Amino acid sequence: PKIIGYDATDQLLIDKLLIELDGTSNKSRLGANAILGASLATAKAAADFFGLPLYYYIGGVNAKELPVPMMNILNGGKHADSGVDLQEFMIVPAGGANFSESLRIGVETFHTLKKVLKEKGYNVAVGDEGGFAPNLKSSEEAIQLIVEAIEKAGYEPGKDIFIALDPAASELYQDEKYILSREGVTRTSGEMIDYYASLVDKYPIISIEDGLAEDDWEGWQKLTQKLGHKIQIVGDDLYVTDKKRLSKGIELKASNSILIKLNQIGTLTETLDTIETAKRAGFTAVISHRSGET
View 1 (cartoon, rainbow, N blue to C red):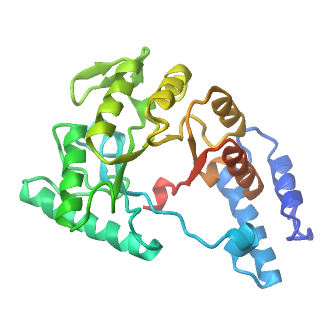
View 2 (view 1 turned 180 degrees about the horizontal axis):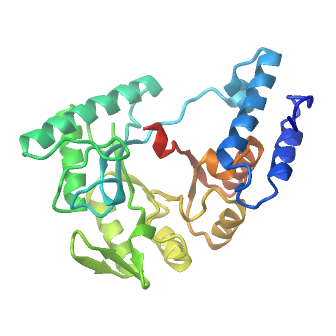
């Protein structure tokens, strides 16, 4: 009732009112999901008023391309009961001429991976994020299986399809060490960076998200120094879509990309502002789904 009567075309004002109504730094009073719903409904109403598609109303004349999808096809870590410590293994079908072709390439590879896993006697049940969750021997085996599936689907790794990792390393971090309990390995920050560098050299990996713990700022700097010129280094837990943490990351050159979770930040205005801040710093922005969507 507090925003009834306000002009839906004044997104900035309505989002400001929603933030003030909540009155907390983390949207805990009204909840970020509720705030986001009201904020996006405002944008949709304004787009309808002007007779424009929502994407055009928000993005203007430059909004004419869909992003390349990053598709989570194999799960480990907390998202699966398996022998794999790293949390997500994704494919990035960048070789598609458009989004629909990239989607088709990704789906074909996903189903081919199922066949590959079955042939090797692995379980093909899916994990919490919708990817397969077989009980593999190591994270590297997971990457090898994905490469095999890409090739058997008729595509070229590193040209048609790339691989992206989300180790969710904050979940592995304890007493300033990274404990990969399922593989029986403990690594320092420097050793984790060397491990990723070796994987990037061997496989067509184009992106690593949350490769180190959220407060291992020095490690993030070194990771980006070592691999940032080759691949996308994405901060998710590192930034939690928070502009203050992003500003620190930009200053320290801790990554070159940010994961954007709309319901983590709350309003459309804050989301667009965070993306613009990232882009001005030369970062890419990856728009995330949330786990409940899969």
